[in-house]
Image (cartoon, rainbow, N blue to C red; front, side, top):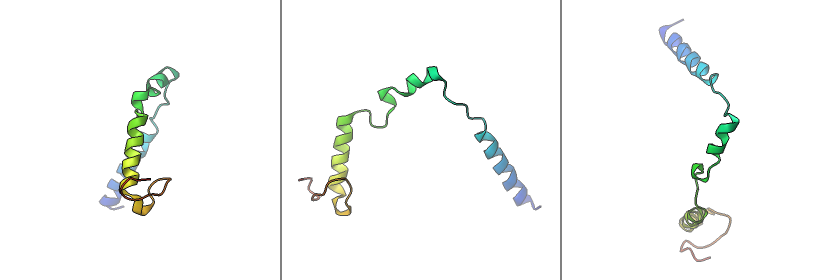
Length: 74
């Protein structure tokens, strides 16, 4: 076995051994993960505004669920 193959095998084994150490989230820790601040879109108004802006800019490619012009006039 060449030194490159040995290094690749060692790196692969160390990467896979790290995957086995993941522990599940305890029931008392789930409350902290369910907080609204932990969401990617914590504000519904801001998420709707971002979606409208994205749809307006990407209307040529059919970005969202509604069709419309690139000016934002639906």
